[in-house]
Picture 1 (cartoon, rainbow, N blue to C red):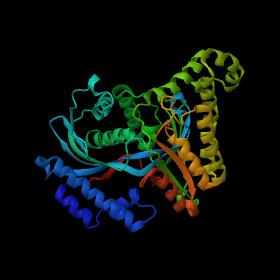
Picture 2 (cartoon, rainbow, N blue to C red):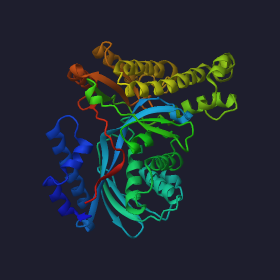
Picture 3 (cartoon, rainbow, N blue to C red):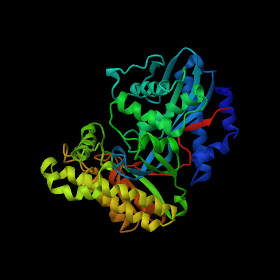
Picture 4 (cartoon, rainbow, N blue to C red):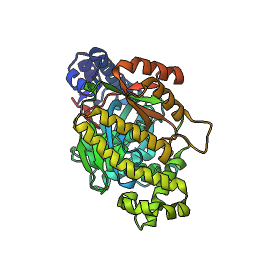
Length: 434
């Protein structure tokens, strides 16, 4: 490592341009490179301001990317298949190790958090906080037998909270990669770090999420994952260059808030679980689809129509995710887009996660999808993105319609709400350790 002043000088001199291009440059070459260099410098300067006692410390840069769910909406928690990808919008941290067992983190715009690596007991007062995520990641790594120590970190984020790009998973993977590099010799695999992140979120943070978010953030690129055995998921990178397909991936922030939707998310897991339990199984992936079809009359009497509809979504979406991966492998963009449209319809009509029954006046996702369809006019595809109920939609937009699409979305929702995405080949990583 080199100290903060030397690091900034080398970035400004272009010494790390090639590395920054790998992670952040996709479309507008010079503009994106300059933005990446400026952000790296800003993050190091932020470290110096946040920790003035360590302004001359040796440091390195680490990244935890956001993720986009491409296929498999609400299938992972039922041990199903998903298709996902890491995006160039990430959390970037300037980090310096310390030897007193204390982790101090300042995320830009937020107060400092501090924990001791020796104190891994779950704290009830930390539920739903960043402290819980950090403590959970530390605990998960420590349980694997690694001896950890502290660090100081200053984090800047291009992953908006509540954006559907999974800022919590990006944060978990970022912290996991820092500890893995500093104290584990880089021995933890991407999937091990993903599982540790999920453990932190489930047990310490208190959110019953599946493993898809963490896996997408950690592995990188377009990834097909089969969670039939969650302890040993089958992970396959799908080589496909979206930029050469003639379509652009957009994530549109509808401006609606995820804040009080934990019960909505949990309701999907609970209702699918009730149906699985009726067959003596833990999750729907273990249930025979034909047996499910035959049992629908009894299931709707026992659990209601919504539980049946949501289970119908799972069985179809589980197959669809595999078909989407195959379409991309074969370079068949039209087949892929048709599957995206089908997924969107299934999420809206069967899974019913485009708006919350607790707040029926808020239907930003259906409205945004309706306006998107007006622009696309049968070309491209648009669907709810991520957990749903609020947050974002995903759209694959023909390049010829991109400007119109962005303009219509931002007229509806406000400037900066339509994010043009790039899939990056690396997940959580060391950006530069000079």
